[in-house]
Image (tube, rainbow, N blue to C red):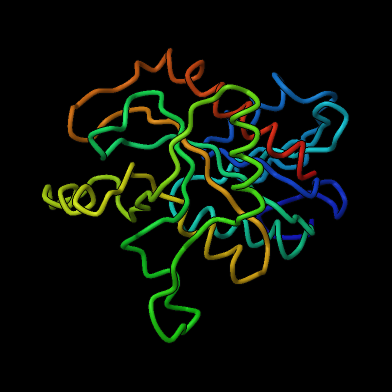
Length: 237
């Protein structure tokens, strides 16, 4: 076992990894889209699989909930397993008026209330931003697939249940498209390690309008996001 959290052997994981929060969604992606997927990790049930997609090697692995969790797994994938690119695929809560249920959002940057970046002692405020090569390819893939995307800022919150109901008003005032919990941690980790990262999200509910996708619709509504991420991964693999 190469790390306390991942039982994969060196070489078991592809250079590009898709990461949903839910490990069962990783299993779904592997079984639906990958050819001959092999499970490389079951530690803490954070399932990971490697297979091929249209002839190219691609991995998919869960990352759990929150910045500490995704950053832990991303750090090990980048540093120990030689992964070059990670694409987060997950859900988000709409904030902006123009954001609609089922919209696909690509996070250009991620504002946050997390203190994760304090460890870097950066002399200023370190912006959490995606990688241009992945963003460029995702936009090209979206055009080719006919997938409508919204590119902009998201907010990565440290809490799911917020005690201050006014915070969403501040997010909206600054043009935040949606709220999620992981992108900033992934982006900072990639920046520090000089790797590639991108978050592609599907709006599953709207914070202001109280709208929400039923559980049975979430899986099928996320297919467009998954296929965009896979096409992006195929081009950079």
